[in-house]
Image 1 (spheres, rainbow, N blue to C red):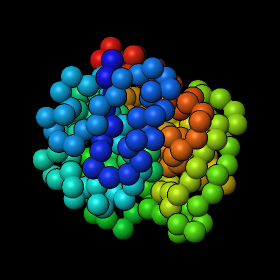
Image 2 (cartoon, rainbow, N blue to C red):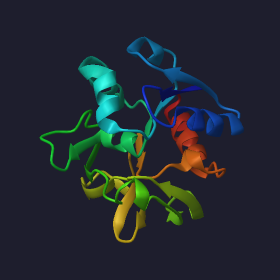
Image 3 (cartoon, rainbow, N blue to C red):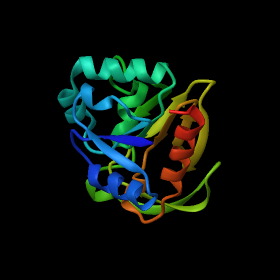
Image 4 (cartoon, helix red, strand yellow):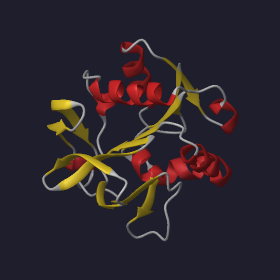
Length: 190
């Protein structure tokens, strides 16, 4: 099993470190050719507009196609924005891989960043979560399974092969969220 990490901008090495702690081989992904042979893909936090510009439309269309074919993807923070079908204040999403609409920077500015613990359905209680200019899910389709909320806002969800989180699990030593994603990858047999 090899899990890719989109490496255009953001918390790439932190996701690599989380996967290393689990004994999972990873590969940085900078172009469409790097997707070959992967079992799943993590889209890290960072700045969603910058990532989308660096990725280009052809690459984003490939991600849309892969998600539609059951390829496991996990988006954290900006990665969640890239996978969402809708973005508040924008005509459309980037890939539409999961039926959610997100509000960017819903948790506030950089100075408003915070850490908390969450109870996450299917993962456990007291899971550490770091929120940095985090987007929140403001609506979701009927096939989306809400997994965690914070102060009334949905911050983690899953739809079949796509997992998203508003927060940064890779910035903690707790690997339970990454373990959950790895189990999703195993379920698909990729």
